[in-house]
Length: 253
Length: 253
DNA sequence: GTCAGTTTGTGCGATATATGAACAAAAGTC
DNA sequence: GACTTTTGTTCATATATCGCACAAACTGAC
Image 1 (spheres, rainbow over the protein chains, first blue to last red):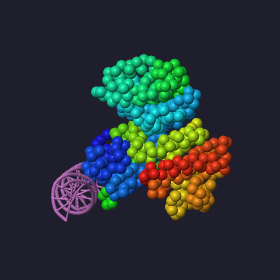
Image 2 (image 1 turned 45 degrees about the horizontal axis):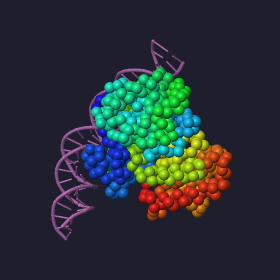
Image 3 (image 1 turned 135 degrees about the vertical axis):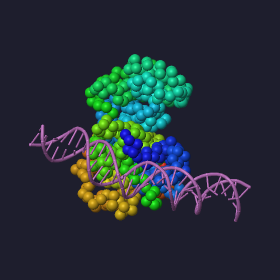
Image 4 (image 1 turned 30 degrees about the vertical axis):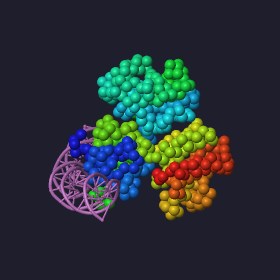
């Protein structure tokens, strides 16, 4: 790609949209300039453009995003086959085991939920397609990181120490890397309250017909109902059965 | 706004992203140029930029969106207070009545789900935050359209005839406008299998402290369980109770 | 009310981007 | 295999955007 094939205004506008995610719902021009590192004049032009297109509202002082922004994510979810393919399997799995089941993919150092069948909620945060969690301490994240070449996984995890979401969170990158090796060996990952106290989960990789890992599938359960040590006995067969069924149905992505 | 305050490249890039929603998951440069009306050279530059930023993948022939696109919608959902405020109420309501409950807002002629608590699925399509349905034949859409000035609602509904999703769908704009008048009078809307056979729903408006309608709340139920005529008796009190509780908590948006 | 400290709006030269035609390369047709 | 048709890429030039510097408007304190 030649550098004239890069359109800076688009990149900046997308940075502006993402800036709203990391902070307040209402941002002034200067706020956005600070958050994005853009010049104020540029931030202003991006915001006015978004407002003109209906992606943002402007009350003369603050900008807010409008629901039209969701068209962009919707474009992905409706255009990507993976969510549609896995949804019926998730529904069935979730109903059979009486727990929430989800499928996610990796985006940088985060996992992104692309489909979910939820039972009565146990987590404090509400997960939905598009939700993000740190890969290093989520069961699906461990499975997806384990599928990468070691140096790549290490780079994504970073130098550490990792953020401790609970007292159980593994914060030492080496500890996580060791865990990844085990996950790679056994073919599944179990998380015992590393992300949220009271929540255990187990995940398996979803591979396509050529054996490439394209996503992860998990079941989450309250620790009070199922001890972490019992997760594999209880849920692994069902997870692996679904993974096996899905395998011929998945291309990449 | 002066015309130099508009960034054309950003507008075009967003058009390109949305183009993926309306068609195939894999699009060539020419496909995108056709769908968006952009010049092939410009479409190519937008796509290469999206690929460079990690929002798209390029295999040398086709482009596909990556999960990173979901960051944009996530920016809206996490930055907007409405979804967070209503979610606990939805969970409680859904559990109490044993049916799915949702909150949506209007975007053009479509409603957009911003929060949802789902029980076992009855609809053929899987609704989630970001999902869109035509406002004219959805219970929440009727409520939201009824809250607009008549000419505005009429403009959104369009000249008709409307698409018939089922034999029950009201396809004559005048019929829908008459329905809106009734909804405005009674303060709620009931849909009897106009969107999908076997599915009834009832919706009420959610107003903020100043009385402005900012969203709609609904309950959907299988027609086999609850006849459309029985929806109001059965669910209206609970819906109105939630609307009343939410009223002082809502600002706009 | 005044004043410093911020934030926002605007004009301008330098620079980057859009455009459409022309060319090159595939893909489809017979 | 030679044809047409479609698609991808390049280039020169007209145009739009960038970011700086300055001016204006707003804030909050006293």
